[in-house]
Image 1 (spheres, one colour):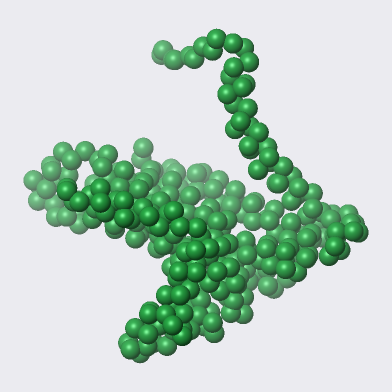
Image 2 (spheres, helix red, strand yellow):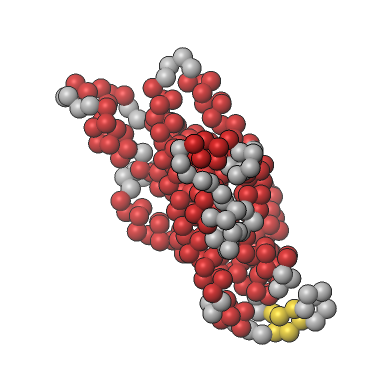
Length: 294
């Protein structure tokens, strides 16, 4: 078996090409991770003037804290809801756009725009739309017999943050699903149509299985997004309320560290959050990837 081997003119050129990526990784990932791990073993006063090494006390206290255990369950519901909603909506949009011939590029451009919106701006936008006093959606829901108020109802608040976070991620998923659909050979679909398979049969028997690598990749990315990159959405819409019903793990890290000034506990929470995401990613690649056909 013949393999391609790249030859560089100088000995140090490969190291020079890799250096920017290595430096960025060290500064923005390795160094903060090491700092968080070190701070999770300490107890500091609110002003950082007195520091005491306490070992794993911050971790043991967290698992005895009812509010932290509540944040675990809230994060699981939020991540599951955001991933399912954003991926299903993106797949539906991609399947419909893929059928278009003339206006495909126009719809693709319009659907990609939300990805350029910052999470905090997306949160403010949906906060206005679902505002119980001035929002259009509560007005319509009240005419249908449902009184919406995410300030007092935990179910409404969770629905609001899931919709806002999923809307921000739909554009990203849409691009990958559309690229996956366009790479499927049309001859397979045409052969199934000749054999009498309907549109739904062709989609679930041929198209969706061929999209399994794209679906698996997006599932991993969306879970990581929901657990790490949705602080702005939570902060702009519900700020973890009402009664901790939308207080996800990443928002609790901020609330305990920057508002409550409990730096040791906040650092321990960030370490646990990172461990959970790594464990979920390993499980997904270890068990779910076996069902994927590349």
